[in-house]
Amino acid sequence: MPLDQTLLLRLAGCFLAGSIPFAVIAMRGTGVNILEAGSKNPGFNNVLRFSKWRAILTLIGDLGKGYAAVLLIGQPAGNLALGWSCGFAVVLGHCYTPWLKFNGGKGIATSAGVMLVLYPKLAAIGLLFFTLLRVTGAKRRWLEAGTIASLGTWIVFTMMLAAFGTRPDTRNAAMMTLLLSWRHRTNFRILMKS
Image (cartoon, rainbow, N blue to C red):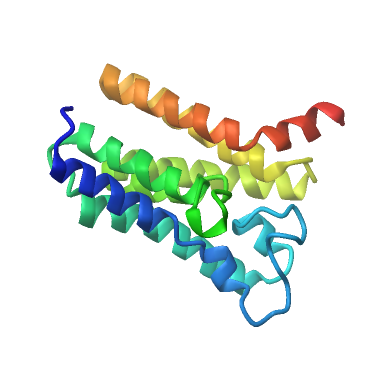
């Protein structure tokens, strides 16, 4: 996809939308600095340690910015390459937000919002799979249940695209899975030490 001024503006808009730190916003007024508490990650799972309803607000915000940025700024109708480009931009904005000194969340909820725009049916299946895996992990007290559910879902989603999508779809999903895995590298270290 050629880079032109319109595309660069769209990518910048998606990056900025992704950079909104909803976990920090949701925890305002609590006296808890989410960047220094728990896992120190500004995302749903860390907020959940302190408040369920604030975690839900974080989830809605993070998922919603992925969905809205790609739908409204990217306008990917009929152009999956554009949709993926904007999707990567919004997820990178979430993971490396300039408002938090280029630190950020791990990108799972935001990437789910992106996929709900690009592949609504497959994303819905993925979200059901995630919920099942997450609930099972919580009941069985898996170490890093959130990481297992999140990345396990992205692996399944990539496999679904390999079966029902095109080669570029599969390649982009694999690249997103690698990006999200990189963001979870600390969680992998914890798993390997157990």
